[in-house]
Length: 66
Image (cartoon, rainbow, N blue to C red; front, side, top):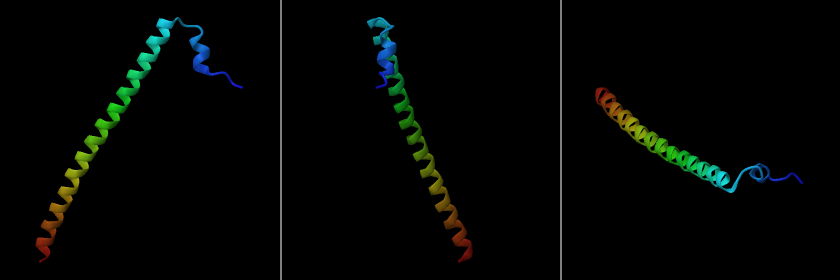
């Protein structure tokens, strides 16, 4: 079978270097997840505002018709 690539490269690093790489990868992953949550929250807020603007515009347009 194909050897585990991570394990293959880990053989050439000291335990401290491996721990450092692992920690850095973990923090990068947590940062990525946090940015996804932040962008999702901002998009939700913007969508909420836009839908309110559309509803207000529809009410104004409807008042001109009647």
